[in-house]
Image (cartoon, rainbow, N blue to C red):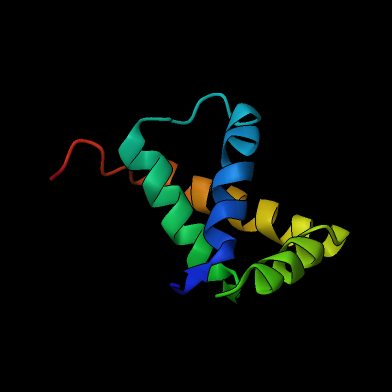
Length: 90
């Protein structure tokens, strides 16, 4: 068993879709991970341990407001990362 933040899965699932709507944004691996990290910092964690917990988290993710919050956090993170990308730094 291990503890997992299910929110990470949701952010990465929606990231590509949201990036498709922001065509002038860098989509290199570093920028995508920076966007995901910033978005996750704006979202409440959804930790799960058992399959039952994961089922609850998945059910919660289906709520419309929850999806709006995820997309909003990703969009905000895209703005931040695109204004100061780190893909050229180490």
